[in-house]
Image (cartoon, rainbow, N blue to C red; front, side):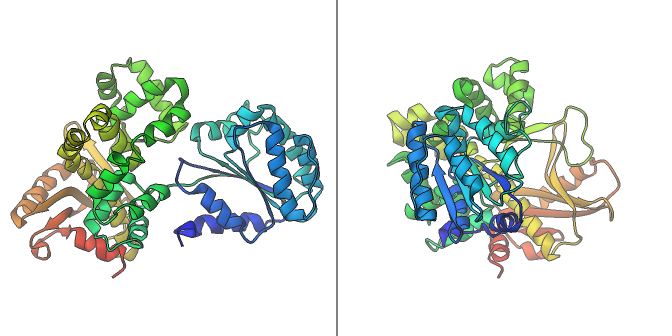
Amino acid sequence: MVRVFNRERELSVLEDLYRAPTSSLVVLYGRRRVGKTELAREFIKDKKSVYLLVETKTEKLLLRDLEDSIEGVMGIRPRLDSCDDFFTLLFKLEEKLVVVFDEFQNFSKVNPELFSKFQRYWDVGHRESGHMFLVIGSYVGLMKKLFQGSKEPLFGRATMLFNVKPFTFEASFELLRAYSDIGIEEAMKVYFMLGGVLKYLLLAGAFGASDALRTFERLFLEPGMLLEEGKNILVLEFGSEHKAYFSILEAIALGKVTPGEIADYSGLAPATVSKYLHELFYEYEIVTREEPVIGAKKRSGRYFLHDNFFRFWFAFIYRHYGALELDPEMGEELVRKDMNTYFGRAFEEVAEEFLIKLNKKGALPFRFLEIGRWWEKEEEIDRIAFSRESRDALFCEVKWRDLSRREAEQIVEKLREKASRVKGKWTEHYCLVARSIEGKDELNFQAFDLQDIERVFLDK
C-alpha cells in the first residue's frame, strides 16, 4: 500500500509519457526521502526496464551492474566494456524499454564525461527509438543545473522536469491513520515536525505516531534517527558554503523573513544574504518568496521555509544541537518551551489547505481564485482568499489555541479593523480557524476548528 500511496497523479503523467510513440527523457527530482525511487519502481513494475543505481564507484563496476540489469530483460548477458557499448546496444533495441538512472547526479563523481556521452547518443538516436529514460536525482540544485544550465551538455534535452513534492497534510493524515488511531491534533503535530516526507512518516508510524511528543523523542532524541538528518542532506546539497546557508535558514525558521532581518540575525553582509536567498529560492527550492497577496509594494517580499521538516530542524534541532547531544533532557525542555509558537506558524499552512478543500466543495460564501498572506508595515492577516471577478474576499485569522467565544469575537473584531486597510473595495467575509472554538456555531462569521478539519479531510 505504502509504495504507491497518494502518487496516482504522478503515475498517470508517467504513463501518458510512456504511451507516446517517441522517446522521452523525464527528470524526477526532489528532496531526499520524498519517495522518488518508490514512485519509479512502482511505475516500471509491469514494464520491461533497465534500472541502475548510480553509486559512487568505478565506471567498470557500474557497467557490471548494467550487465546484470540487461540480462534480466534480454535473457542474455551482454559484455559492456564502456558506456559507448551500453548506449550503442540500447539504441539498437527495437522493443520499448524504460531506462532508470537513480541518483543520476553521481555520474559527476564516476566520470563527468558521461553527461556529454549521454547527450551525444540521445541526440543521434532518440528520434528512432521509443525508449523512455527516467532520470532520478536528490540534489535539487545540481539536477536543475544539469538540465537547465545553458552551458551543460544536457541543457534542453529533458522532455519534462518533474518535481516530486512531499505529501499534503490531508495525505499525511491518511498515511498516519493506517498505522494507528491517531487523532487530528497529534497528526498535525507530527506533520508540523516531519512534513509530508514519506520516509519520515513511515518512521513515525513505526515509532509511536499516536503521540507526537513520543514520536519526537524516538526520532530526534533516542535513538535519534533524524537528529542529524537536516545536516546530512543539506551539507551534500550546499557543499563547502553550507555554514552560510545554514545561518540564513536558521534565521528564516525563527521568523526572520526580510533580507534585513536575516542579515542582522546571521551576521552576514546584506549583499551575501541576497545572493544566497536567490540561490535558495531559484536553484534549491528550499525557501519561497512571497508578496502580500493584495496590494504588494516594491521590495515588500518575505522569505519562508516551505518544508516543515527543515523548518523544525533549524528552529529546534540545529539551534539546540549542543544541548540535545550533551543533556537530552535539558535540550528537550528547550524544544518543548517554544514548540507551540512554532506549531502556530505551521498551522497556517494547514488552514490554507483546509480552505482550498472547502472552496472546491463549494462550502464557502463564494468561490475564491487566489489565497495568500497579507501584510503592511506592522499589520498582518494570516490569509486572504478572494475573487477579483466578484470582488468577494474572505479575511481569515489562524490560531493554534483553544478559544472562548469572547476571545474568538475579539480576534475577528480586530481582523475587521485590519481588513479596512487592505487595498480595494471588497465584499467582506470573515473567518477564524483555531484548535477549538467555544460556541462556534453561534458566531456571525465562519469559524472552524480541528473537528471541522478532521471531518472535511476524512470526507465525513
